[in-house]
Image (cartoon, one colour):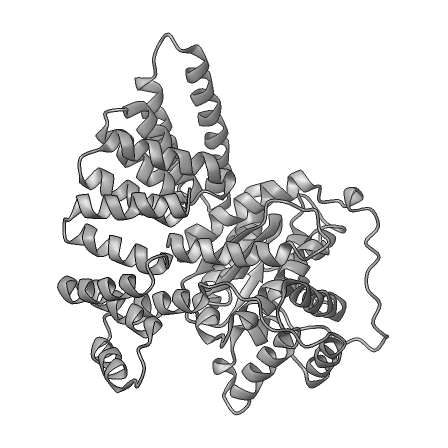
Amino acid sequence: MKYNSLLLIFCLIFTPPVAHSEPLKLPDMGDPSSAVLSPEEDRQLGQAFMRSVRRALPVVDDVEVHTYINTLGYKLLANTDTNQAGFHFFVVDQPTINAFAGPGGYIGVHTGLILEAQSEGELAAVLAHEITHVTQRHLARAFQKASKANLQTAAAILAALILSSIDPQAAQAAIVAATAGNIQQQLNFTRAHEKEADWLGIETLARAGYDPSYMASFFKRLQEASRYSDSAAIPELLRTHPVTANRISDAQSRAARYPRIADNALPGFEYVQAKLRVAQDHNRPGYVKQLENQINQSKAANPLLRYEYALALLSNNRLKQARKISDALIQQDPENINFITLKAKISDHLGQYDEAKQQLADALTLYPNHPWLTVLYTRVLMADGQPEAAAKHIRALVTEQGPFSLPLYYRLLAKAQGMANHRTDSHLSLAEYYYQIGQTRPAIQQLESALKLADEDNDYNRQRIEAKLKQLQEVALQEEELEGGKH
């Protein structure tokens, strides 16, 4: 791995463009397999990067939000020419309007951007832009002139640069610790990469069934809204993806080449926005009353508004009121998965486990292996004293999701296994949970506990635990060396 150009990677995201007088010339890709950063190195760096991000930033592990953003991301990916697999889309709980692409196809978007978007098409435009940074190997190209650095150093630098959009002082300290010196001046950025991401992102939008003008219109709206603001109020997306009048005009001209398109949006965008608003505002004085007044003043029944109101009531433990609204919503649209999960959560909170189990079992026949339904079902089964059944369902979800499994799944699996007295398996699941969230030493402790409990007669299982333990011990040493022995 190389560290000088690791910093160059995030010039794609965090640094203004260098002025150029020469005409636009897109880089010659050549054979992707000949890139200095191999696909396997890219994958490993991506995993380490995500662990560093989870240590530094509040990643949203809400399964509904996670499922939605990945569904949208893969809808866009299906309309590109890439054959690259293994993209991971995630949401960071930050009010700033920003998004970023990391190595290994890890693409993050802030909650502030999702809430600012006026349509799914605007959110899709930003994701399409970030996807292009990855598919066009902009990140890998940055490794072409590099010096050596280990994987943990690389991941820490990248995570520190992500952090720079939120807390510059903390990011600076992290970069200095990671590189033994301030080397941010080595960041560089070219207009070519940004323009390529605009152009191909617009094509992806059109192919996926979204109006290709969304990219220019969203950037223009953000730019106009912040025109008379001081520099601190400029949206992070405009700082990390600097926008000029020429760039907006160029994107508009590009989009005009495509026919007008009636949006082929997913059904969940506005419900995700409602959920994020509740998570952000449910403790704000007057928020619940504000929603109630909006409902009373509305001339027509608004299911989305009533859904948000019920979520806010649930968050404030006003369960009977929330239940009354959820019953009405289910009666109106019995197959709406948002209404199904809302009602099941309320039944769970009320301790009505038989009813919640039946609701979720029926829903899983409509939506087999749906992650959020499965997680809710697992929780209800554990609350009802059925840990073996709970472990079976969440284990099946982990198997089905594979590398896309959230840390939350492993934590639930560990709890169910512990309740069922499968102590070795519980420690192994907890080890995976801690490792994924970037807590290497606690993961090692769980593996050591699992090794003590492992069956003496099962050599394969013991060897597997020992191999994982050795791997994590090496990672921990690298991390501790990087952080000056402070972990």
